[in-house]
Length: 256
Image 1 (cartoon, rainbow, N blue to C red):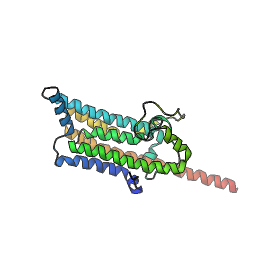
Image 2: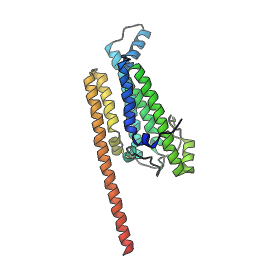
Image 3: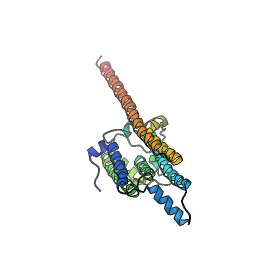
Image 4: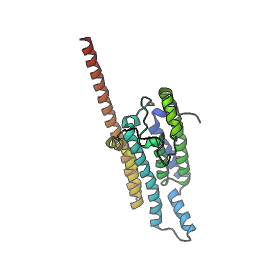
């Protein structure tokens, strides 16, 4: 499989959005939601007629996948740094081998796949397949792009890490001892707020079965994303300005 291009990495958020868009567009020719199809199949297997509560229960299972995605992504971002999460270039300077990175090398992309499965319960049958398959393929291509860059920068230390920790499917037990890093949960929540709002939207729909509630909260998740990216970007600029100021002060001190 070919690695993703620089363009694909830089615009990955919008490409993820396009994958979801294509999946939900499939309602134009496949009108049955996968949650309804699953609920009907389970009810027929049990020899009874499906109820509204059965449908709610199926949607709740999908919501659990989305919540799991939000938890895993937040855990990963709290160790990785939210600025790296929105970076437009592959970050190769540091190797993170703590928290979820002791179980899997790419917990954020694993979270994306759970996210696709969870929201896929809201899609049509064809849409569900395209969403999950598209997310797996695209995440895998992004992983190949990132790992090539990190391996070139980190060398043997990264190759040893890759030999110990699985790429995308998490191990049941940590493959490395803790490195002593501390998670920044506030930063993790900041970076993953939009996923949490999407999870809340699916939970709200499972309870109310009101599409308006779901889509209003879905739109709100993109608003949260924009706000969080703006805050993170502003914080990054302040750090860069402070670092430049400190470098200038050290230069002046040496010259004097």
